[in-house]
Amino acid sequence: MINDHPGGRDAVLRHAGKDATEDFIPIHPSDTLHKHLPKEKHLGPVKPDNKRKEVMNHVLVAKSGDSKDMPLKLCQNLLDMEAQASKVLSERAFTYFHSAADSLGALRANERDWSRVSFRPRVLRNVVDADMSCRIMGQSSRLPIFIAPMAMIRLADDEGELAFARAASSHGIPYAISTYSSYSHDEVMQCVNDEGLGRMQMFQLYVPRRRENAIQLIHKARRLGFRSLLVTVDTPVVGKREEDDRYKARVEYQSGVADTPRTADISDSDDKPVLRGVHSSTLNWEDISWIRGAWGDSGPIILKGIQSAEDALLAYHAGVDGIYLSNHGGRQLDFAPSALQTLLEIRKFCPIIIGKLQIYVDGGVRRGSDVLKAICLGATAVGLGRPFVYALGAYGRKGVERAIELLSDEIETTMRLLGANKLSDLSPHYVNTKELEHYLIESVDRKEAKARL
Image (cartoon, helix red, strand yellow):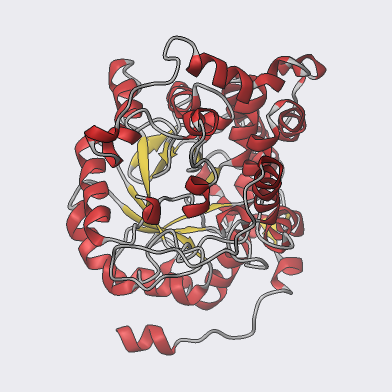
């Protein structure tokens, strides 16, 4: 198990011979031990009557301290909630959610590039009606947004992924659940079924190093009733997230753990040991075939992590249903392009796929106006991850619902000010992208795409 642990060997070795309850409970589904350890290794719970309650109180202890700094009613935008989350989340939680790769180049590009696109509104139009509804990955949505997949949400609040499922359902938008959810996928879907939340859940897949494990995950997602499959393709290795690594190193140093050099992750699969290689490092375009076979006709297949026009075109020819433009929230390759820049690159070099593939984007979105800029340029819908986690961490499920309401208000207001009655009215004519286009490359490499046709 240690060789295939998603957090790496060090995450296990750091707790060797110690009580790991405090670190374990907030980020692991309740069935983790039953799935990965033989029955004879289960020695029973530690202080079963009160340990879990003590742990969650400790992990989230700050939430009861400064929460009155900014009452939820006073939050007027997503940035207000992020500021509050930075005060009330535990250091461990905020560091994990906030961290990004290396020198934060990709993270900053995500935030900056939205401001490099301006609007060109039309006036003297009847905008009494404003229809924000659309279809996202085959599902009807009241808004052109969805909750993007993020791991270990229970670090932010004990309700975790269940809060996201409930809030998304109550506002009629989809939610993409991570492979590494802190509630098991069974628990989330049982909540969906028991509470009649509607089937608007999408499954995000990190492809394991062993193909049989990947197929098992896909089959389970089908059985549980997930409506679409998001295959993450930008994680052959895990990015170097220094803020998170520094926090872990400090915890290890303070606990007296010996300083050991980082080595390649070892697996029982046929893959060679690869540094930071938690997932499959051999995943390639040929693998789309068996992934499609395992998923069957259960819904759309979307490739998450497309960052170039060349790969967008390859995805189109691979026959997937959609592409998800994303640099993983700036957490993988430093100085990777923003999703917005990739979208412009696609418009410039392979416009054939606009309208033929579903196109989703995320990264740095903080305003309803950002959402509509993406829609104008051909995006189907927009995902938000960190903003919803911060809302949850600062205010619980009510914070997530408030965040959706704020975005809805901003989207509706911006649509009317642009002179649009429905999302399909929007087009590139409503935006000025000249400033961002300055950063686009002059040509792309079409050799690989041609070779595969």
